[in-house]
Length: 261
Image (tube, rainbow, N blue to C red):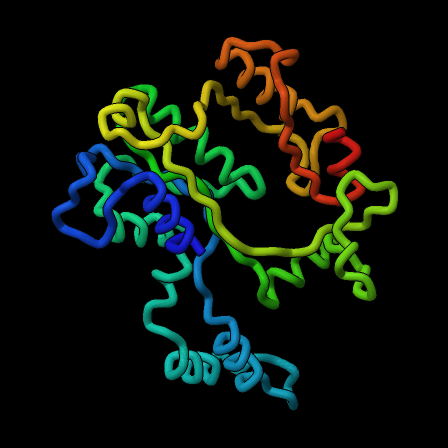
């Protein structure tokens, strides 16, 4: 997902990939990456198969020696590296040759937006000219599905999947777990003008905060969201009256949607 989105974004922004001699006018030491990404690839099928084979039915306990034997023979030797959350950024760096500031943040649903904001700040303070920013994640596997199900965050409208996700509806009952990636190319104005690339938009402000409340839901008054939006407006030097469009979180859960509204 991350590489696919990065390839598309780089193509639109005129950034050369898979070459030791790029001709796009970007100093690779000034090209950075900031991603919001969770754990990487995990070979769950092999992992759980090893558990099944190592379960001692007579004693109702795990035979860890057997588990290690099965897992060692079947699990990928690259598993520990593949599951690290910095791997998407590492692969994009190899793809593009980026040697500038590289970061990965794990702030749940806010991670990709935070990555874009932090990437903008890196360019603003002069540490990079171009940043590849965004995020990628997939939790459609047994552990991910079970975790969200235990949190009662998933919709149970299995008989009507097309209309199950209904954010801000009075009849909402949870979200539908998805997966994917999105990438933006952030660039200083002088660099973009020098390269003659099309400028789609300007990032003018950013704010980040925390509810300091609970790990599962927002503060009842949304104090973290209010603080971060207030700081973003101040950073941009505009009023809330100047805002034309609001991109909501809209998880379709009872707790989040009412507070966000």
